[in-house]
Length: 204
Length: 204
Image 1 (cartoon, chains in turn yellow, red):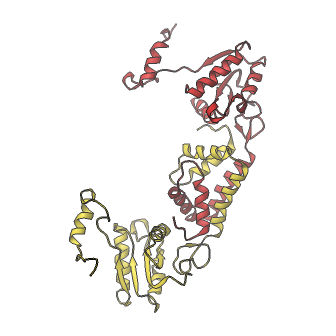
Image 2: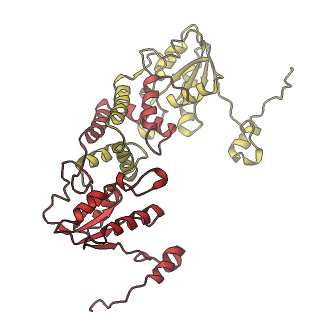
Image 3: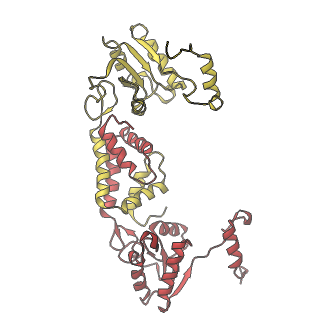
């Protein structure tokens, strides 16, 4: 690309450092900002800079937080006996969106991946084991993707918690609710038959 | 989306104001910045803010420029008898990338579009007509897309320039060089037959 302006070029390069944004898209974003008021760009820039300057990791669950303790951990109405272990803040948001879970979280910050140099020490597993020893903790729910890295991480955590006395569970996996059997992938359908559960009548 | 952090939410909202960026992508961009150093976000923010604060429109050709006069207009080696009229800075960049054109440009800033309330007065057409009266200007090349708005704009400019004495041309359109006839779209192929040109031997 042949930029007639250094300023435009620098802004395009800045946008193009973001994941999934190539130089053509970066140029479109830059020209969009040029077409708007200066105030608009100042607000955009301020929101991002302010976020990056002030964002913290919750000292209890390691989720991203505005304060030293996040608003889930600080919420007295949450069930403190349950800790749901997830990989990242995205998973926390997805579970919160369901409105079905009222316990606490623990954000690992990644999964064990020896090939990428991520061992248990790079994650917040020690802090999870510490939380598991607290009297109020009764159950740890693993909500981690069943990939090779996810399985390794779940295996490691479960092994470390074996003698702690807290229950360890994993979220249910199977054919989606409302999903047609013929459209379910083979692995999911196959496993959901192997891992079948007793059928209960609603008024049991 | 249920954000556990106001700061993250504000950054996501800021990214999501950009064209083509939804909230899921905005969250990915935000988390990318969280995963990098603060310095990284400061540089990103600075490049964009600096661009928006200092970018100008060239007082001659209306292209985006770092100075009051852009580096194409200021370049003494460019052929000042030719003015290529384009819709936006993107077209200038595309033509500059070819390395085939050594004249000047004129950026309209849009096309005549009565349905969207864009009349000739909203574009830089008056300034173009003014430039056409200058002694050094000999030819005006219209490099505008042949859409309804583009055709209207070209028609308007050509009509206004009728008595000015400068030549008005349009870029050549037809089947791409190297393009297979069978893959050319019908309109292009049909028009390229109607608008055929005398075949010249290279050593003519």
